[in-house]
Length: 326
Image 1 (cartoon, one colour):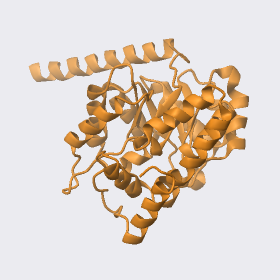
Image 2 (cartoon, rainbow, N blue to C red):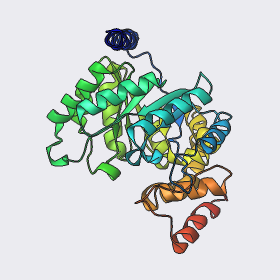
Image 3 (cartoon, rainbow, N blue to C red):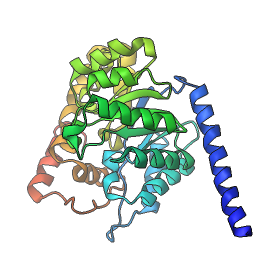
Image 4 (cartoon, rainbow, N blue to C red):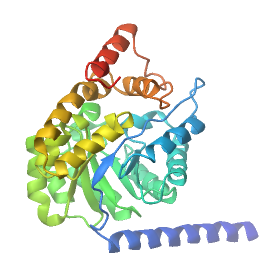
């Protein structure tokens, strides 16, 4: 009998916490300012493929000294599809405990089903996330039209205890979040912005133009088009390259905000090749390798991701050293 009472009490306490967080989130609608630069941090794995939390802590200590607005945890560069649900939540919890309170923690909570995404978003909020980044479900991509995606994100945002950021990354999902869906979702009380990794500046500009009255915020999803995104009204960027060139990406942000466009353009030129190397060309394995070269801990990738070949390593080194970054 006592056991049953304890279970009921625990459920009630959790429900009360969720109601409180939802009320808090929705009452402060549009007030979560996500302007700034965020590295989508890598998850360091040891040789046994387990998360190396000590190495993660050491990376976080270094990142805390860079003028980031916050960190994106369990995004694409965190290899989130290869982590268990428990690991995903634990990594977010660990990050929240280790970084300064004034830094935002944006946690990737996207799953393939709406129900699983709702549950994961709740767990990420409990782990300390300030907002959740929700990638488009894509396994049944042929059926993921505007109607399905609006329904999905609305259900997640209705339930999420913290604000939701939409995440369109067609290079990984094969699916662009349709502009008309973004425009509809921008009107939701608990959806504060979009991370767009597609790189189509015309599309990004159109979304910014059409959602200005909603207070909607757009983040560039790559350092390769950060200047262009700022020029049309983006408020920041989630940039893989910031894991290794954090000061430089933040400098590019400051040049853009100060209207020093010629200097910004020269810096942007020098970031394009290394950015392409750790994103579209070689991906996470390259990012982790450059982290090791740069004094951070990348560690190995979880299979089936494989390390770079010798030829790829030489090309990667060239892409960074030719611009003076190694």
